[in-house]
Image (tube, rainbow, N blue to C red):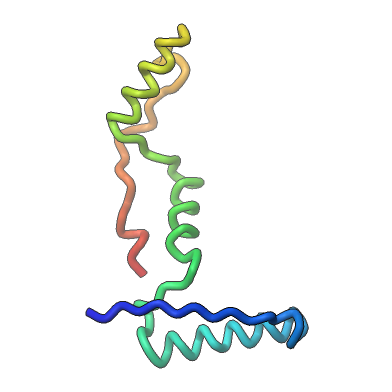
Amino acid sequence: RRISHTFIAQVIDFLYTKEEAKSRVRELMEDYESLYFGPATRWPGDRSDKAEEYAIKEGIPYSEGQINTLRRSAEHVGLDFDRLLKSKGKKSYPVEIFNK
């Protein structure tokens, strides 16, 4: 399987207006995606956007180890962890959101 990375840097505000620059970058992205990797192409921010959408909607699932650390920390400062935080269920992070 071939994996490649491309980095392009341009001083776009010198060459074009903001609208022209956005249009040219959008066109470049569409051309690159259609000519090379199609729907498998990933762009900066794709995965983090999906992860953020999930976290806002569903919350951030914690592992048992993380929960135990938080529980010990709460105990150390004299707080009742279970009273402060009610469980929302045992969700695991859906790794498939990172697949394009």
